[in-house]
View 1 (cartoon, one colour):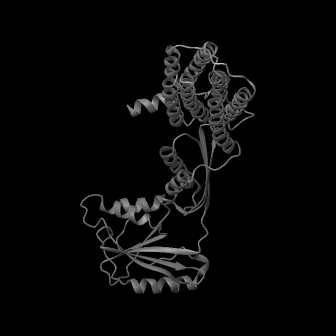
View 2 (cartoon, helix red, strand yellow):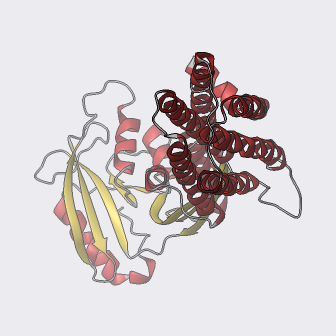
View 3 (cartoon, rainbow, N blue to C red):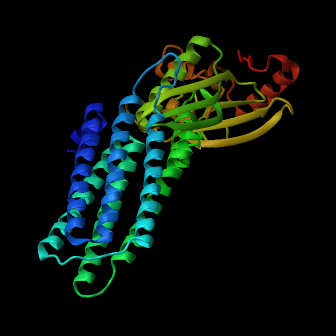
Amino acid sequence: MNKFWNGFSRSESAIRRVALYSLILNISLVFAKLALSVVTGSLALRADAIHSLVDVFGSLALIMGLIISNWKSSSFPYGFYKVENLVSILISLLLFLTAYEIVREALTTESLINPYGGWVLLAVGLMIPAPLLFGRFEARVGKIANSPSLIADGSQFKVDALTASIVLFALLGQRYGVPLDRIAALVIAIFVIKAGWNILVDGMRVLLDASVDAQTLMKIRAIVEAEPTVSAVKAVTARNSGRYLFVEVDVTLRITDLKRAHQASELMEKKIREAVPHVDRVLIHYEPQIRTKIRYVLPLANAKGEISIHFGEAPFFSLVEIDLQRKAVSRRDVLANPYRDLTKGRGLRVAEFLLGHKPDVVLTRENLSGKGPGYAFADAGVETVQIEAESLDKIVKDLLTEIKKDSANQSSVRFI
């Protein structure tokens, strides 16, 4: 059911159909409220009819906005998506106009309630669930389709249901001799102003290119940081345009080959689109890293520092980071192998585990050439070097010696 709902709500024809339903419902409410206001003479009913009349213009603007927002033009390479946000702002301004008319009526027009039967109360009562249920439906469609104008229009209907409830309360009070008609009209105006303000703020945020919520930015950053080819994420920004999202990411990559860097950026873009809905464009700026440190990973046979002859079966791995400016060890950790007991795919899972720690060079006594881990490291831009040394301390000492000898060629250390 959810799959069907999502598919329905994201289709353009379904979105426009919901907007058409909105127009039909608003026109029906206008005629019903105007007729009842004539019968009763209720100022609150007349004010609510004015509210619904303005909603009719809002529904027309909604339909036009949905159509125009999907136009394409070479003069507008980023599309007309923000037309939807302009429509939502127009709806908010119409709400403010509605509130003004209601207040003016309440303060300057005399309220003359005519005698009316119980059927009027029933008719007003029936006008409460229709806009409430449709407003919830439209807002849900708007959220799934990420359509700000549909969400704004759905909020309008919820306010309509609330104002109809206030009208019913006022008519009930009037029936029993309590003059609430004028007060009810002013209360309706307050709710209309509040709804208009919320819609206006949301629309202006998008038009001014405000950033999307922090949670979405964190999700995008986590996707990018998890990529083995990425050595650092410099910036992640995103903004809304209508119902769509534009994302920009600045990263440094550990790979220098242009073709492989492009493949890495395409993979990141694909994962961002899969994780974040309604993304129209993803722009990834990448540049090769300038090394100030080199991070080495070595398989250990034991915690004492003896180098393992096997890669995937090694119980531990040593992570050694050397600062190239100070030519000294800046970090030295021991990592337990979580996949040591696997019978299948162990080497590849270990490689993926180690890539999460962002190594630059893997030193191992086992030849990884032509094997799964070797391919995984190569795809991530990680250098693999086969060594013969058996002691971690000796390897670290030799690394420091080699770096001090030839600091201009820091990444080409070899062990024969």
